[in-house]
Length: 283
Ligand code: CAA
Ligand code: NAD
Image 1: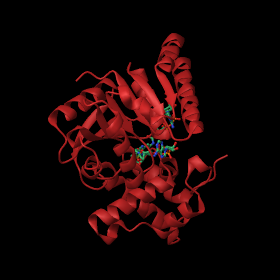
Image 2: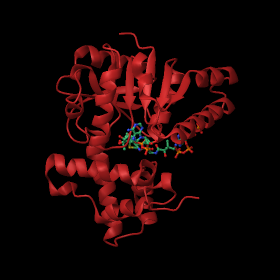
Image 3: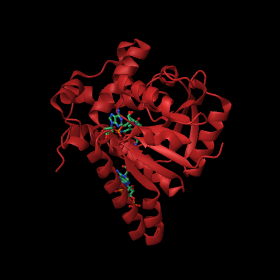
């Protein structure tokens, strides 16, 4: 199937990044958010990052303008009626995602593929709420989307070979590397990353070291580009908690128990960089 029109649902840090790379690859993109303000902010973010590309000589001013012209904003889900591929990037919550998928299933044309950027939720379960489970797939981008090369591709139990082939080809066109993994809680990326972040939070919770020192150890000692607590703030502590809950519930193993300090911060509204406070304070 040839993909021309892409709709992105959720214009937060991931959705806006996905919309940007799709537009840069030449797709016509509609970026949707329930909050009009969020979509506008997403577009501003894209504008800033494209401008940086111009300044760095990676793109001409004309290419920037053309890329921006390929992105339309909407708060009306009905605009999905012409989409070949929809990529959902709303909050990491099964109830919210399944509702979006049910609605999209009634709007998107019969050939349309419904992809989810979920970090950890079972694709098979999301697919099961639609009448087209063979056209539902996980397309898990990494943050920050314009920089990171990986897209984890997750096939649900009923995902067809054709759907997989279309999404793999699209990923290559986005200049990313697809890696196919099976549908298991947290897939590969977050099954490995998130317990490390959770353990870093336990290390602070148990008074072993300050957030700064935990991050220093992992950056200088393990050559990680960001310490785990800086990374947790960057990902969003709400997203980190949701992923840990899904691992804990999905495997039923106490080794995935979310740290109480993580729960406390999320309850306080300290969600990391996006709210101005998490393990660190952001101006
Ligand atoms: N958005 C877009 N571009 C960004 C960015 C952002 N938020 N942050 C940095 N960049 C760009 C910068 O503009 C810079 O590009 P140019 O200078 O060439 O224009 C380039 O990235 C490098 O940035 P810096 O030199 O400022 O900083 P850095 O060398 O530390 O790199 C980083 C920044 C790439 C984010 C690096 O710190 C890194 O790789 N961090 C770890 C990221 C990571 O682990 N991501 C996965 C998160 S988990 C996930 O995504 C899955 C999930 O489900 C939770
Ligand atoms: P975010 O909080 O930055 O953005 C979520 C956006 O979705 C918000 O703008 C919100 O208004 C919008 N939204 C909520 N409900 C909606 C609905 N019903 N319809 C349309 N829009 C709706 O979150 P994010 O970090 O961009 O994460 C989005 C998804 O991507 C999550 O599933 C998350 O697990 C996944 N993910 C996140 C990261 C990360 O590092 N943050 C990495 C990979 C994947």
